[in-house]
Amino acid sequence: MIRFSISKKRSAAKNWRYVSYAVAVLLLFAAGAKIVNMIEILAGDGLLAVRSMLIAVIGLESAIAVYLLIGDSFWSWVLTVVTFAVFSLASVYAIAIGQHCNCISQAIGQQFMLPFDLTVLALVWRVRPAARVGWNKRLTFQILGSLAAGIFVAGAASFYDPAEQSDPLRF
Image (tube, rainbow, N blue to C red; front, top):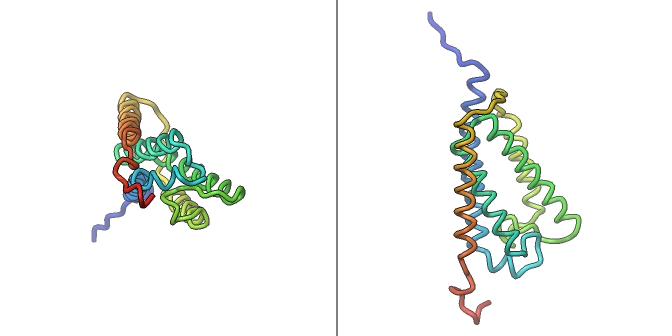
């Protein structure tokens, strides 16, 4: 009888790809939700109530999502760990000062986002791929492509004026 086995490293890398795609979709959803809820976020007093900060976060979330889709497994894992650690710290800070984190919208508060971010962080930690530290032209292209996508989305979001399309009597 012939038995085939998949090595643990190969399995972890494959699992990471699935998780990275899911996290990328999650980040793109969060960036899109911030664009759609821009009036609500800017009208509040949360952490992202400053337009330039909100646009920067939208661009960063988009760039990170694109890198998770096209980037190197190890570096995309590192980027995801750092991203969700920062998101968790931002939620803790928002809870400590009593402001809204504006993670997705005013409807979803930091009390929900902190456990969610920590859960994503634990899942990502569990399926980490094998370490492969190195630099090459492909990695440079992946990083530059992701940054270009993030800048494009941030630029598009900066030209978007939701107040122009809203009913002034409802605002």
